[in-house]
Length: 337
Image (cartoon, rainbow, N blue to C red; front, top):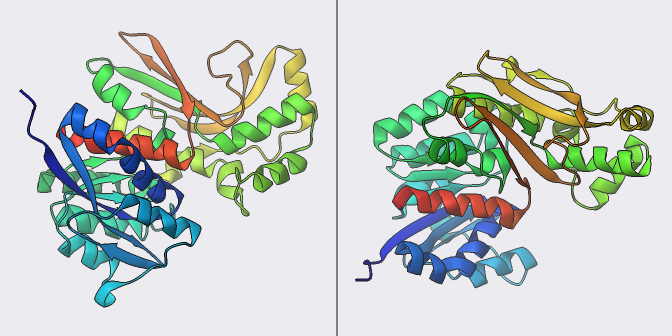
C-alpha cells in the first residue's frame, strides 16, 4: 500500500547561490522525493535583502529561479520583514543560507533562534552561528523539540556529520582530519602542477569565481578553522570556539617549497585536524603522494579515524550551489524519514 504523502512547507532565508540551489534541487527532485519518501516539498516563502515572496500553497520554483537571471523582479508584501516571514508564515522547516559572519553570526543567528522559538525545524549551511553559539542553538532546539541540521556547513556535498552519527554510530571517533576548503586546494594544486607563483594562481581563482575579491577567509585558514570548530562541537562535544584553533594559512607557501616536497614524494595541503585530545589545528602539512588526503583541484576530503571501523575517508565537492543544496535536501528529508 502506497504511504500517504506528507506536505512539508519550507522557507528559504537568503536567496543567493545556495538558496537558489535549494529551489533548483526541490524543482528537480520533487517527484522522486514524493515517490521514495512520501514527502511533498513546497516552498512557502523566500526572503533576501532584495525582497520577499510568500505563498503558503507553494511558490513556483521555476519562477523563483528567474530572480537570479533578472527575468523576475523582487517584491516585498505589505512591508513584511524576514523575521515576520519566519514567525508568521505557516511552514515546517526554515532553510538558512545567508552569508557566513564569523564575528557576530548575524543575521543568521537571529534567523535560526527565531525559527526554533517559533517551533520550526532549521537546516542551514551558515557556519557563523554554529561556530559562535553551538551549545545555545542545540539546547534551544532540544528544548523546543525541533531539529537543527547543518551538514552543508562543514563539507558541502561531502557527508561527514551524517556519516559519523548514522553509519558509524557506536564507534568512538578518535580524530578527523582533512581538506575542508576547495579554494586553497585549487591554489596549491595549480601551484604544484604548473610551478606558478601564489599571486598568479590566486588571481586565476578569483577570475574563475573560486575565490572572493577578498580571499582572506579562505587563504588564511579562517574558513577551515570555522568548519573544524563545528566538527569539534558536533562530533567531540567540545564546546569550542574559533579562538581555540591554531590557524596558519597558505599565503607563505612558495612554488619552491612545493617543488621540494614533490621531489621528496610529498604534496603540501592545508589540513584541518581535530582529535580527542582537544587539539584543533589548521596548517599546511606535508602529505605523502599516495595518502588518501591527497586530492586535487577543488575537492574536499576527510579521514575519520575510529576505534572500531578504522579509518574511513570521504571525498567530495565542498562547494557549489547544487552540491551544497544536495546536503540541505538530505537534511530536510532526514527530519521526516
